[in-house]
Length: 526
Ligand code: SF4
Image (cartoon, rainbow, N blue to C red):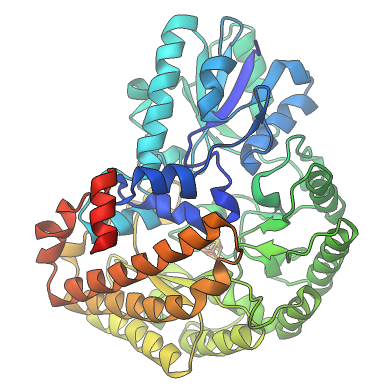
């Protein structure tokens, strides 16, 4: 048996069948996600080699690498998926580490989907609780310590005893985590809440377990300083190109067929604060695409986030990326981008840094221009915007609704999803207690119109885009495609209902339950 076991719940420790965006499906209340869809399609089991996962969430791989780099042996540490923990944990186990993203279903996407659909525990919370209750019962038998860490940690403050958590670990793992583990193994007491120090980017150890879907981190933190955001609290750094390429190559040599960059803004790679570095970004893509070609990987290099302001400043880099990646109407990219609000007043107050070097009053025009640039380069963005800024007025919401209408008028291809504001742990608005969770019923009519406008455009474009997003001829892809079209129809009805009156959320939507097979079949037939 191994001394240190690292794991995560099923909603985190899966490859989402290769489609990372399936993870958003797990942010729904579980009563709306049939078991067969969750376990067979959205979150399949991770295969193992003995106890070891064949691939792992990137963050767990980094924790493992940090322990190995600080002197622990391969035999001391195992990264294992949740269905293997009964086998992995035993008398020799001294520490169990759990990585969390959204353990109580309070992240912005989960909170929004719960609010719009009538509430209930999300799949993310359900899976977290299943795992933690299992670990807690094993802890009673074997007496190990439980450390929980990750971006969703803030949701667990106050729940430590309920889930048998000894340490809630925030921040980065490279420096502090191994020291804390050594202290625990030496029998010392450690505080219940620990914050990890940042390591210099060139001293971050490389992963030794392949990462799920080929994720590789290229930047840490964000220098833009939005008040509702917590990655911005971390010191902004770019990972040296040599380390990025070594991790990509490690994945490719070990059978992973994807390359996907983890970043808050791919165009900030190599930047000095907000001074952008086009050459560094070009070099990053050039080197990664040649590595992909060397290993015969036909899929393009993916990236999660980008910002409109960086894109407009570096138009040529956006075009360069499209060219080198061979993007086209049939092979587009789908970056995630928060535009947050089109009201200059809200920009100035809550996210001035996001629009730099432009001015708050330029933001609506920047968004329109950036959208044209993206679409011309075959980037079809998944935009999100925020509803529920504490002092938002009717005019602020109308500004955003008008922007969405303008995007539609310009033939924008992409999505516009509203997110309800929540005080994410560690963000400025949470620390200064400037905002509470947003409740639908407390929103003015203009805010509901603004929500409906974004969903309507998203539904319209989903019908055009879903086939491009979910390529593949496998049975899973075909079944998922059919289900997604069904879901789009249901979404349209759902939004129409909300537009007619919010009572429908409590009176009708909160009662829907298709978790079991019979409910699911009835829903499909309807
Ligand atoms: S630009 Fe994005 S990642 Fe950066 S601070 Fe703002 S919300 Fe956070």
